[in-house]
Amino acid sequence: MSDTAPVLLWFRRDLRLSDHAALRAAVAAGGPVIPVVLRDALVEGLGTAPQWRLGLGLEALDAALEEKGSRLILRSGRAVEMLPALVEETGARAVYWSRAYDPESVARDTEVKAALKARDVDAQSFAGHLMFEPWTVETKQGQFYKVYTPFWKAVRGRDVAAPEATPGRIPAPANWPESERLEDWALGAGMRRGAGVVRPYVQLGERAAQSRLGAFMASKVADYDYGRDRVAEDGTSCLSENLSLGEISPAQCWHAGMRAHEDGKPGAETFLKELVWREFAYHLLWHTPRLATDNWREDWDAFPWNEDERLAEVKAWKQGRTGVPFVDAGLREMYVTGRMHNRARMVVASYLTKHLMCHWKIGMHWFEDCLIDWDPASNAMGWQWSAGSGPDATPYFRVFNPITQRERFDPQRAYVTRWIAEGRSSPSAEALSYFEAIPESWSLSPDDAYPAPVVGVDEGRKRALAAYENRDF
Image (tube, rainbow, N blue to C red; front, top):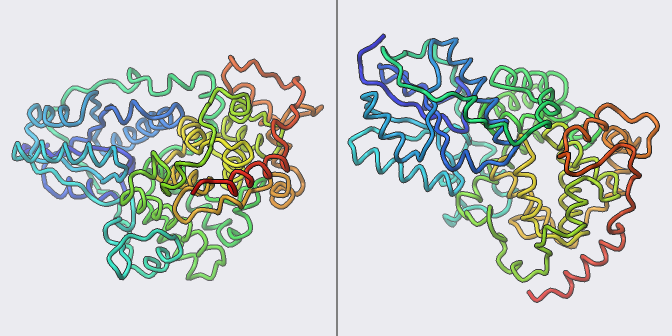
């Protein structure tokens, strides 16, 4: 045990011990390191599934820290009050954390840093959630990028620092401060019975994330160009769950992808492009925070989207009972696994915003409540891309046809069959699990008849295109 003044290490969306610049700096400072997690307004404001998944991630992180002779200290309250209080309590000389880039986190962190520095406390933030800091990627005119392809070309040749190993030891203080109990935070309370359904699909913690990356690189990345769109096949990395909470770093994924690319595996470059798409989403969120709250293209404020969530069509969409099998299968996959295949996400989002003419915010907020891989930048970017209101978006007149999409990407109907039980004599276990995961108040049963489409595919497309052609902007 060292008597040197400790460093407080504030964990947020960086729940790992390897390739963690803030942790390595804290250890290098030479004194004890006190890992801290705060339940503040940003944690309490998380949706049901992301909050539950955060609780599981914190359990895994605490177990990993225990193996290093360390532990998490949990406190509730505003960071600008709790961190200075912990500094006083522990005699800490510094507080370190990994940067976040969403507007709420930026505002909080700016306030915290100013408050700590006013007390002569060393307050430092470190990179790690992204490979390329948003302010370091500029056009030749010194502007931020608004289109993905030029952004990709600007960063694809940049050096990404090799991932750092886990510190050999994390020095502990002579006396630990008091900690709240994670179980008392009840982060999973809102999941109710759905927690037991989703839990088997969770790949929890840093070790599982590394195993998931290794398995993908060994057996799937070569066929990623084809496999990533086949909704019934296990052709994607599924790393979004772990990247969301920082159980693995993007740099670790990048270097694995580069090795596969150098080995001649054809799908590796597409995987690298997907990592950079995530970077692009954060680039845009940093430079234009309205991406998460308002139409990125402001002229879309005049578009006549429905914003009333009480409509029967919206309820049917949320329940996965639109009568359009590909759309319903995607939503049901989300309720059972906590994730949704990316191809299905695009179809599901297009159907809501175009066939049903509902505002993308309805879908964005619903995903924010239901996804265990929820990410503030990717979720907002994805919904605005699908709706046509965002940067580099799919044109509004490009309306995904869920029937032809199913025929192309689920030709044997295996995906639809896996997730929809109604009308089948022997539904799959996954299809039946949907009825165990959803709220009891929905009063749905596998014996119910499968519904007729709430809006016909052709009818919805024509209505959407007519609204687009008659727009006032």
